[in-house]
Length: 276
Picture 1: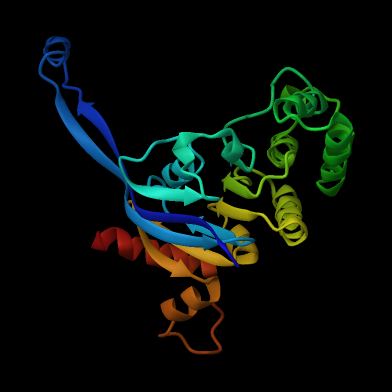
Picture 2: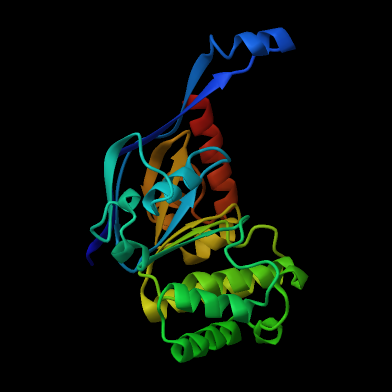
């Protein structure tokens, strides 16, 4: 397998300032601001091979979304370097953007006031896709995701689960080689989660894209991920497979004791939070 994503000491520091209490102090702060640096991601070095699903796990504010935004070109790093498909993402070259897609679970990329089918037609024009082939593609994906019956319904009238399925179709319409998924099952019911999980598993087996997936539902990671990345306070603290992580984290358990992956992750992140 070839290396699709690699980073070297990738770092992102955000600058903000402390706002003092009171009106007069707020006025004074315009000329004498106390700046504060927030390290969102600190000297991250990793390599990801083609065709893998990589589960990126960490607490809120650990740096997961910041890493995805840098790898997709939405955010420029403070220092360090990264290559995705041979491109520096933040240069945002068209050849790069045509080969990737990012789906942020709490943000819409489709148009709110028109139907998903109309949104897909617009995306096909944006990506310069053949209209007939694009239509056949989104019809096929909708069939796999069991949402064909709502393709002509205004997006704002769809349920959360149906909207997320449509967002996934939109993200895959141009057949990206690298797919960044940030909480794609957030807030969904168990049935919708299972449908999306099964779809992603089959899609990756068929098309072979490289996927980085973040989720707070550990079933998504345990059932889909070929590789696990654990991030804590801006640092990658574990890289490896899910079974290896569970085995190393539970050496004190009896061999016949059932291991709860979600509990193992929770304990691990709690320990990392105390240490750092």
